[in-house]
Length: 283
Image (cartoon, rainbow, N blue to C red; front, side, top):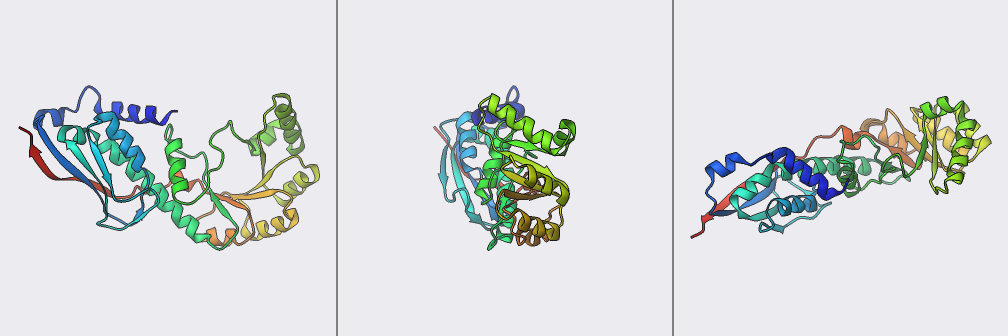
């Protein structure tokens, strides 16, 4: 979905047939400014999304920024100032904060994961465990946090998971039918295959035909042994049951990628506050 359309739909959801609270209580002539303050430590993300929200609501609102996406912020830091019609800013306030707080929360948590594996060769990946219709923004926040995006959806990479393999009749059959499909349809997509045991890894190595091998719910000791067995012939990825507490141990196995669904589906929004600091009545 187009980012602007996502923003429009979010505003429609919130405003409905009108922001009656603001219309009823705030005179049309009132102008002022609102400041976005950080109320906790984190990584800011979503400033351009916030700008698009206010442009949709009222293009006469201006934004002066003091931080940029990816910056570390502390409690009390000023992120940006909005200036313009009070009614319009009040109408945009909640949608703007919803985007900013969630995206900054994702970027903040992602940075913690990235920092934890610093010094190893492992790269942190997100997954498709995203909020419906918010994927483009949430995956952007992951990049802001310093990690990398896995496939965006079902269309830009082949991933043969356990259910695909079982329905296809086995590892070898799944690989062969997939390669035939890609050739027939002239699709230059990479193939990743999920494995559930060392024996399945050996079967993939014997058969070939993939680009990346995923280790599902392997222990760090099992992955270390398997990475040595693969010896750089294929990209490798660890997934399943990996927590912040075990992350470093997995990263030190030599695996190329570690995918973490929690980057986008188990996060705490960053605490931000948008407050009026001044207002004036126009003549």
